[in-house]
Amino acid sequence: MNGLNESVVSEFMLLGLASSWETKVFLMLIFSLIYLGIILGNLFIFFLVIFDSHLHSPMYFLLANLSLIDVGLSSTTVPKMITDLLNEYKIISFQSCMTQICFIHIMGGVEMVLLIAMAFDRYTAICKPLRYLNIMNPKICVSFVIAGWVIGVIHAMSQFAFIINLPFCGPNKVDSFYCDFPRIIKLACTDGAKFEFVIAANSGFMSMGTFFLLILSYIFILVTVWKRSSGDLSKAFVTLSAHITVVVLFFTPCMFLYVWPFPTSSIDKYLFIVDFAITPVLNPAIYTLRNKDIKISIKRLSKWGHYVKFC
Image (tube, rainbow, N blue to C red):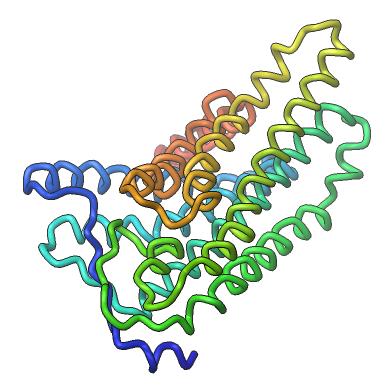
């Protein structure tokens, strides 16, 4: 941690999303509503899965963990982005910036593993239904979550170890609403070529590799169903459409930024609004609108609420 003491720069200035006052107020209201939706929607799913015994299955266990991670991931950036919209000078300390980067990549790593686990769960349910409960037993489900956190920490720390000791001796303006490796490296007073390779080899490879692994797994599931059902893919496609939507939304910004680091335009900060705000607020709807079990559970909860009220 010597880099913290040796760096001349003690804080960074975030340039944010907008310049006009009217746009800032509009965005503040929109993102405040979105963040409220993220908190309420995802925590509702999380507690619904916990308290409804009918949802104590592998798929919903993984969904509850995904909801919790969505809350954490959005909370690392969205609250500060909202408050900064009303501040003329958007300042973040060096320590807070490094902490934000770590949490973003830890939780991003966990989410990638959870999406892989959910794809594996759907593969097992669709392709091996008779062995589903034996394969997706509680031990395996917990192992997926633990592996996600371990991989997330290793993923974040392996990059953080390179960044923390970089000399920051002058420029401190970050053209974004949050801190992340590619834009912070650009401000270091050193040649960033080797660090660009580290980012591409780590975050870039992880993002692209996970994305193609998930897409291939969904294609394999659809092909398997097509062969077994004489070309009728409707049920499988309905089941997988939510997962595919989440995967595309989540990984597109990641691949854009990390496969080609050192961004030369501001487009990546707008793309990452999808990861930090849009995807987390859509996930509860995406996973519940076509989910019969969740709908039944909500009706059961509603009936219980009416019963308590009249008692």
